[in-house]
View (cartoon, helix red, strand yellow):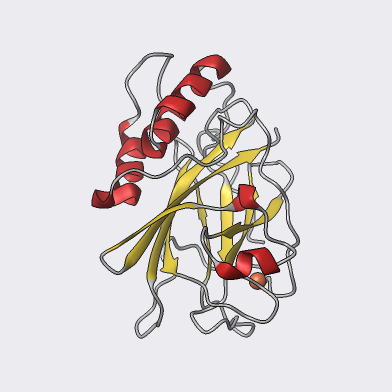
Length: 231
Ligand SMILES: [Fe+2]
């Protein structure tokens, strides 16, 4: 795990931020496609305009292919994201980078974007997100940092990862490992999954609540997920 966000500079967690009522979020979560629902989670006062940064990112993630189906986030009864095993292939001190792509890397391009939220749907800024995954052939780099990297959520809790769709390996469906940590808070270790994978039902670790919302478009995959931290 890389170090927690630096303590210098403006406090990244200065206290309660803008929020919507749960009732309002329920309405939005049920009524809007995912990009707009995510944007609604970190916009201004109730009824105010959506925050442009996250809204723009969500729109980018959804792309021209259309909107995505809702995933559990702030419209699921405020449950925190499920924790899952770290597995045997975590390597600490990954490089800070939002793109894991490297020249010559095989596999279908994948962009996963989303937010980090509290259980009452407040954005978590400067949350650490440390991703690691297998390559297109199902292999982990256990000597170096290929397909490993960490980043920090932005002021609206937003994050964006550029990578490739992970390959299959024995006993596992496609998945991406991640550790998510708000400053000075416990680490959430979990895994993200992809809908429609035949191996999902054969993988004892697979959980539907950890599936991304996704679209395949122009040979690439665009996906979204909102992490909800219990804090
Ligand atoms: Fe794994």
